[in-house]
Length: 147
Image (tube, rainbow, N blue to C red):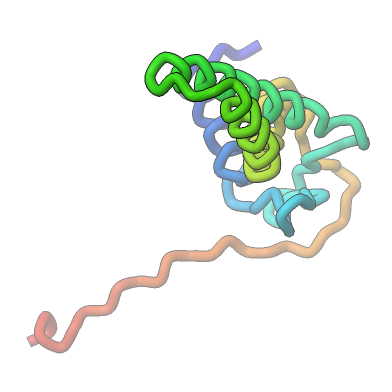
C-alpha cells in the first residue's frame, strides 16, 4: 500500500466538505438541498453504493451539533448566567437548525472519508454522457494595453 502525506487526506476531506467530488474535484455532490447526486457528472464516481452508506454523514452531523451545543451551553452559562429554561430552549433550537443546515456538509465529509477508505469509486460498466470541465475564460487585453 502506498503511503501518502497527511495533507492528501485532509485535502480530500476538505473537498468533500466543499461538496465536490473527492475523485476529480470538479463535480457537485448535491442536486438539491437534501438530494445527493447518484454519480459525479465528470468522472462517474458513485457517491453512495447502497441506501445505508449515507448514515455516516448523519452521525458526523449529529456529533458536531452535540459537541458545539454542549460546549456553547457551558460557555454561555459561565459568561452570562442565563436561566436553565432559556438555555434548553435556545440550544434545542440550535441543534435542530444546525442539523438541517449542516446536513449536506456532514454528508460531504462522509463521502470524503469513504473515498479515502475505498468505498467511493467509479463503476466500470456504467454508461454516461461525458461532460467537459469548464475552462477558465482567457482574459483579453484592453484597448489601452494594446497601444
